Structures are given as C-alpha cells and as structure tokens.
Amino acid sequence: MAVSQKTIIFADDNAFNNLILTTMGTSRKETKKGKSEMISDKYVRFDWAMKRLLRDKANYGVVEGLITTLLGKKIKIQKLLESESNQDSEDAKQNRVDLLAEDEQGSLFLIEVQNETEFAYFQRMLFGASKLVTEYINRGQGYEKVRKVYSINIVYFNLGQGKDIVYHGKTEFRGIHDGEILQLSPFQRQKFDADVVSDLYPEYFILKVNDFNRWSRVPLEQWIYVLNTGDIPEDADAPGLDEAREKLKIARMTKAELNSYYRHLDNVVILRDNIETATWEGKMEGRAEGRAEGLAEGRAEGLAEGRAEGRAEGRAEALAERNVEIARSMKADNLPTETIMKYTGLTSEEIANL
Image 1 (tube, one colour):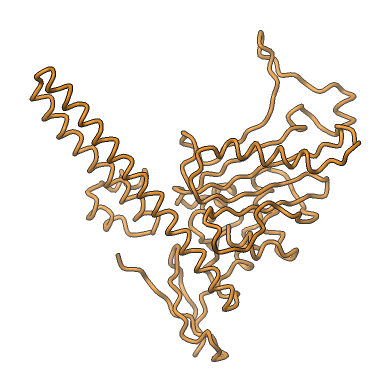
Image 2 (cartoon, helix red, strand yellow; image 1 turned 90 degrees about the horizontal axis):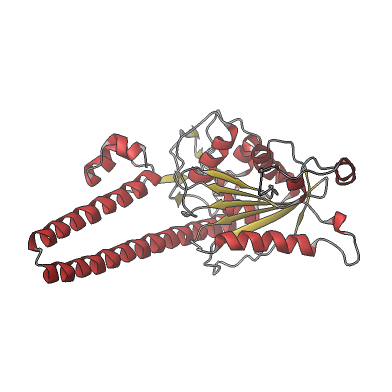
C-alpha cells in the first residue's frame, strides 16, 4: 500500500531541512512561499498532545473546549493535578495517557485515552473515579466535602457492545415498586449546591471514536471526528477546536518533539496491528474448532452433505469477515472507496456503513 509523503523545508536551513514527514490523516492544501513550505493544517494526535502540549496553562482552552462540549456547560480549568500516568517513557506499551484537571468549583475531570484493548476497562473506570473520591478529601473532613468527579474515557478499541459513539453513565436511585427517582430534599439542594442526587456521584463518559469518519455540524460529533482522524477542518466551530487548530500543529514542534511524536505513532500502529492480528487468529482458531466439531458430529450422524455445506459456509463467512476487516483498516487510512471496493469486493454502501 502506497503511503503519501510531504517534505517540510524550514527557512532557517537548520537540521530540519528536507526532513521527510509521513503524514497521517486527511490530506489538505499546502502553502508555498519561496523556499519555505510549511504544513500548517496537520495536527498531532490528542493522546500525545495530552502528555506533552496540553499540560501548559496557555493550552488549557483545548481541554476546556472538549469538556464544555461534552457536558453542555462552560468549564474553566483552574489547574492540572498529578495523574497516574504522567510518565514519559516510550516503553509504556499500554499506550494509555491520562490528564487530571480541576475546575473553579473544585470538580475533578479525569480524561483518559486508551489505545489498547482491556476487557476489564469498565472496572478500571470505576477504580479510577473511586480513587479520586478518596484521595481528594482530607482526613476528618465531613462527607459533604467529597469532590464531584467526571471520568472521560476516549477509547480506540471496541469496548462493550453498542452502536453509539458516546455513552454517559451516572448514579440514580429508583424505587423498586413504582420506578420513582429518589430526590434531594430542599435543604440538601441548598447545602450541596446540587439539583439531583446524581450530581453528587461520579459521572462517566465513554467516547468510542475509532470508526467515526463523518464530518458534522454537531459540536460533539466534530470533536469525535477530530479525535479519530487528527484533522481539524476549516469550518470546525466546536468549543476548543479553534485553539486546537493553532496549538496542535505539527509544524510548531521542535526536532526532539517530532522524533518523540513519530515514535509514539509507530507504537500505536504496531499496537493496533497486534490487536487485529490476535483478533483474526482467535476467529480462525474458533472456526477451525467449530468445523472440527461439526465434522465429528456429521460423521456420527452420517450427514455428509451437511458437512460439505458447513465447510463452504464457514469459508465464505471467514472470507467475508476478513474483507470487512481489511476494508475497515483501509477506510481508517482514508483510501478511496473505489480502491477499497477493488481489493475487498465490498459495495460502496457496505463501505460507507463501516
């Protein structure tokens, strides 16, 4: 598969001259001025930006924009706090990054990006939020001092089973007889500055961004698109994306940052390839075992014709699923639909629905 390349030539003739950058994401127009050719509209991945760029107070607006869009209310970050994975090791193969922020009201926002499949990730979310609840209250303080926690999870793998791209979880207490939701008393609403019981408990957001490649005028869908593709179109107007367009430019990075960033991309690509390979091998082993069992039963029952049909259907199903996996990967790499159709046999409608 051919990979497009662009050359960035810096005007000051330093070590960046003629540096070849293999760009990832949607191709955009470039501007040339004499000797200098700068890619002004290619941006770093959000997980790497969280680790390096967005911890600078001058760049808080990007994170504030994401949270504001997600919660539907204006959020102002007061400061960033030390979080679990603030390490800077290239050997962190779990490819997980988190960022912990505190707003002006003292609420805590744990934003986590997870590239690697983790079957117990739901429990990890619970553990992370619970840990913040206990760590950010001093011994001897009353329970009314428990902080509000928002757990925002950006996942690049297939978590759970569902077709939506954004999920919201919160705690409510319902009557077992009539389904009535238990409410705060007037005194509690005033004392805790909360409207409902769920305002006192951690809330969880899951953003499943992997397969969302459609540009939208809806602010939250704009953010999902950016998180998946790394591209920020000119007409993006969701809160924080204007700041992201300026702060996350690849062309702004130093040589050391570029080297670190591309090593990070290599790790992400290798990780995803390993996940896809393991998934495919697991499916093949499962089908092989299933066919073997089917053949044994068929022999016992003398159903030779059924065995032949089972093999044919199994091979056809395996080939069809493999083509879907290949098409999904090619689509994620923004290859033309015609090319995907040629190599997978899928129709344009089937590709559009992936």
